[in-house]
Image (cartoon, rainbow, N blue to C red; front, side, top):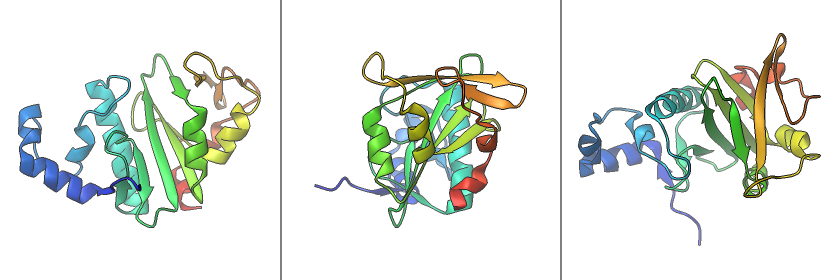
Length: 181
């Protein structure tokens, strides 16, 4: 059975109409759907706000996106279902991310797929195509809970993954233009 697709606009309308935004102390406005709590790791106000700004930037480039799974609000899919973008956040003093092999395989099933690593604030992101991330983690072993544990390390030329020191991620730094490939 195919998951229900929620358009960003209808999600805002339905959530605003139910009064759930008022219960959270949020005002119903465009993009307010991004502030609804997701599942998984608890979100902080900072992560919600910064991911919201990143998602708004993505939609300004790609147009309205769908949320195919109401429990995975950080996973956006184009209306024609050919492009997938997953947004993940870490505080700037940690830069730690965990990615499951199952998610990578799922995202790779799209014609185009990306993961956007938000590094503490919306103005600091890495936009990495899933196939290139898959190539980076190909020689790594999943750890704890069967996930790839990735730590970003700043360096003079950009960023690299601690677990894959050969990586040069400078091309992906704030490179939203990759989404239009």
